[in-house]
Image (cartoon, rainbow, N blue to C red; front, side, top):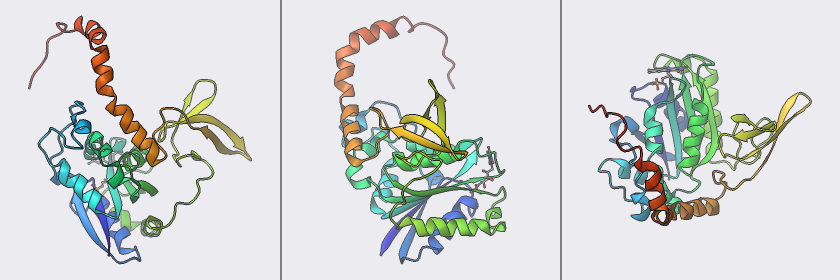
Length: 278
Ligand SMILES: Cc1cc2nc3c(=O)[nH]c(=O)nc-3n(C[C@H](O)[C@H](O)[C@H](O)COP(=O)(O)O)c2cc1C
């Protein structure tokens, strides 16, 4: 039997995130067991940026609950992730886990392209800010294969299902989870399916999900994106993810090699300002 892990980013019990995950599970036709993980139940400390996990085969120096979360992800055949919009983005526990993402790089082989769907809930239509990009980035950077990510609206716990269309959204995500990915077309990045872009120099656009850039033209009034791969894209294949891990591993020797010149830069800032402590 398939094992599905529901990752709930909301602290609210039986809130919109939790019931969306459960509804998606109800509508999956394949027999499966649903395991649930509420991120707020786990102590996930802020990343210290020391890179030790990369050299310690994934073992972070911080003593917290990261390992059981990663193990649950490894153990699952597929993921359903949901998060509420808090102040125009996914709430902090999703970003907090993602910030520990260097630990995921040691597990590329075990985590790569687990099928996943994402749901963002928001209280006010149009006030979701960049939360959809937040959940899409989360799925990408935990190395999952995003089979579909959607926003649903509802402020009060349970309110999402006052709109029957949201049950349909759950059905669509349920149907997509174990299906092959459909080819990306239309107003999205042809490389990764991202639909958030930044306008950059020379009338070019950059996809905020895979970091590749290109041009946007209008065909019959509809935007069409031509995006080409670049050097520091956010990997589209497992090989590129492994290559990125190698690049990160090279950071230590780059640091050692440039330590003296870096100290010259930082040294003059040591004594400036007074630190306020808690
Ligand atoms: C602290 C906080 C900030 C919020 N910020 C936004 C926001 O910026 N935009 C929005 O549309 N809804 C916002 N909401 C509403 C929630 O996204 C919405 O109620 C959501 O359905 C909550 O999901 P839950 O029931 O699973 O917790 C906010 C809610 C809280 C508690």
